[in-house]
Amino acid sequence: MSQIVHQTRLEVRVRPKSRKNQVGKIVGNKIRIHVTQPPVDGKANAALVRMLANVLGVAKSSIVIHRGERSMDKVIIIRGINYEAAMQKLIAASSS
Image (tube, rainbow, N blue to C red; front, top):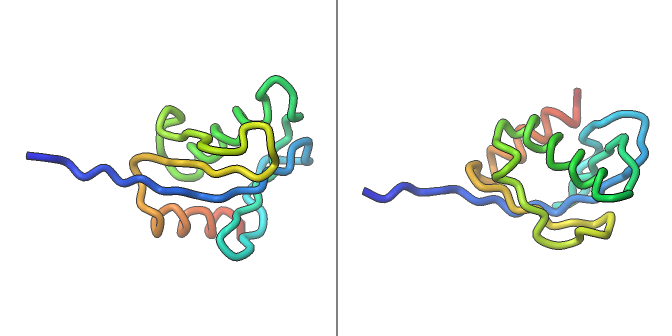
């Protein structure tokens, strides 16, 4: 028996050195995410992964920065959640 593993691709724009960690506006298909960590030594990327894992309810190990490791614009691949469920959770987090 094979198991279907959902994989979601998200486009995000990260705002490092923000006042607090939060999901910001969702503009088109790009999600703005604010993190308090500076973009030094991968700290902002680590904060992004931690925050997405908490909001989406998945393990940190299932989140990969596919493109944009050194850029504010990133493509994130998340295993274990489908796109619709991920967007519902992100929309809920952005409005709170």
